[in-house]
Length: 197
Image (cartoon, rainbow, N blue to C red; front, top):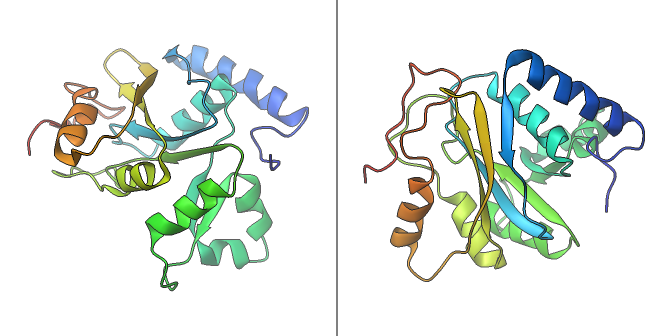
């Protein structure tokens, strides 16, 4: 397993303590736990604020997870490219003939443990449709999707619901979105309606 900010000795323990303290101070809590599975896609929604990233870090440290995220390849070639690798980044080269999904599936197959975090909305602004990359990666890699549901009204993040893709994509997406029905994010003014298709 590669060393990242989430499993660096001593530092990760300190950051976990700080994350738990900050979560308590601002009134947020985490319900549930991540599944004991070596590989899955972790999706989080609703994404309504720049503060979502800070909340995400707090949750990941709280859960003691070692996760990854996709980043454009140029970031990993810069003088500080090592930093993005250390933060769990997985480079995506859009110039390659191999598409984003195939690159992530390849990264998954080369890893003993693989937890890829994705916000399916792709933006903190309102979108009527999710980006389906997370689903296609999970389906092609043969791994499940795990939900992290942000409930801004109750300052709670619910984690741990596992969904295994089937051969019916439309039914699968409807089932996955149902877990987020009626939830609002950190910014309650940006409400999302997840069950419109």
